[in-house]
Length: 144
Length: 110
Image 1 (cartoon, each protein chain N blue to C red):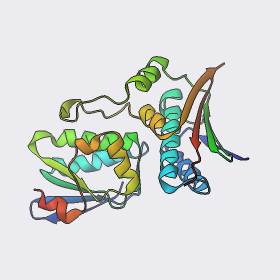
Image 2 (cartoon, chains in turn orange, red; image 1 turned 180 degrees about the vertical axis):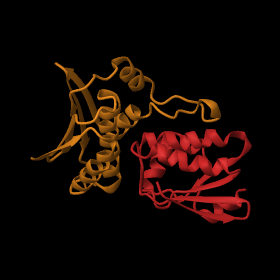
Image 3 (cartoon, rainbow over the protein chains, first blue to last red; image 1 turned 90 degrees about the horizontal axis):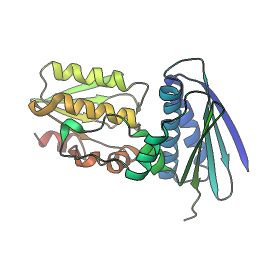
Image 4 (tube, each protein chain N blue to C red; image 1 turned 30 degrees about the vertical axis):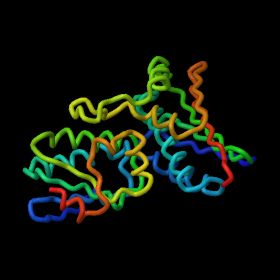
């Protein structure tokens, strides 16, 4: 079991470096498609922390830890900002992404992040306790 | 965000030169794209050949550009790398956008 933690300041300019680092580390145990999926889930999670939990306030910390085990990789994204809206989370988990592709005026320009996180990972769990928020995600390692 | 453009008859091909369209530069992507639409370009090919990562904000920005050109024009996309193509499929944006293999095929669609 190997583990690393990355900590960044809450600035969107820093997020790509987390994404690329996680993608490369996952390449040791996952195929490229799965690595890309994990990268997208992590980037969406960190963006959420910066945009929603911290409301773009800089100089706050986002911590991303990656643990590579024999059967799965586990990722935790942590912040100390405002907790996620539980109703929104449940709605997306239940309904997925609903829109009519033919109705151009009502195509979504936002609100797709949580849907993507859930779609990319095998398990997703969100906990908020004493002002500390943790999004835990698991991607199973499948041997072809 | 940096772009490269190419005129093919009345079609304008716009090629972002960054490898990522994400939350950090979604606004700059949108502003750049809208400036060409404001300059009366109504037939636009968005060539994503250099882009290997798009997040939900980047995708939202591409959708915003589609809405901005509206019914007065048309924007199609081409040269989607695997992660970008997977994102379009998963979010069903492949039903919203006309997607082509390369610039030649995209240009021929107008």
